[in-house]
Length: 328
Image: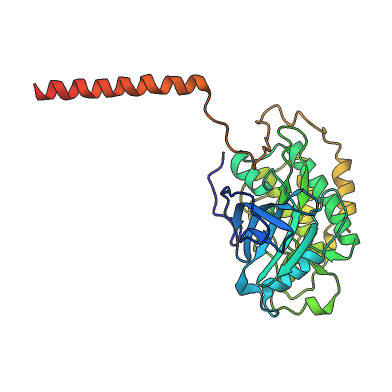
């Protein structure tokens, strides 16, 4: 397993804390629709909670905007409005299921994705087998094809924004999430922000020269992400040799005109490699395991619990014996 790297700025800190089901009108009730249960993380804009949608009875992930960001002119509120407005129906795109605003609380709901992120998987597992990485890239490019067909540029494709359903050692299921900085390509109202928008390391070179957001920007980020899948290193990692190298190199080309024409073209090139579909994913590397992160750790087995007491008593007896010998 690779050494743990610092988390990206603004990434929610994990550590769920349990809470009883709130009654309507309580502090843990949001606009009479969502009941907060456990805290999942805190970021720059606010907090993320595990909650229940009272209207549907389904569990959701609920983003609560911080009170200081409710100013109509705040960047966080603009990001919130952008994210809730993106409703793309695709199996690998995580779209909002609802949103509410009441007094000083603004909240955005999405389906609760229980397997963590690709960033989590890389931190825990390390470099992924080539066929497993190819499966993730296939789903990511498929998702971006739908996003770009809707006229949207994501602008923040990175491992922390790629969620995973818990599929164990089977085929992974990826969802592209967090459309908070997404824009409609060519919309002049959303391209006047000074400087490039996104995360350092994943920004296409042309953005540094003041270029507008385009789908080619997202494809560049896919090339960076693909390299990380194979190396479990930072976004500046060198591209390792292998069957995915030519495609990833073209995606990461500094000249956008030399990148694949669109996500569909990149996906066709990937599928033309005819890699084994898996599982099994590799004969040489451990199998990635995407577990359910919303389930508490199981209690110790009863046999182990029975062994702890005699061992403790033995240590105490030895300590008393040593003390007695010293005193005599």
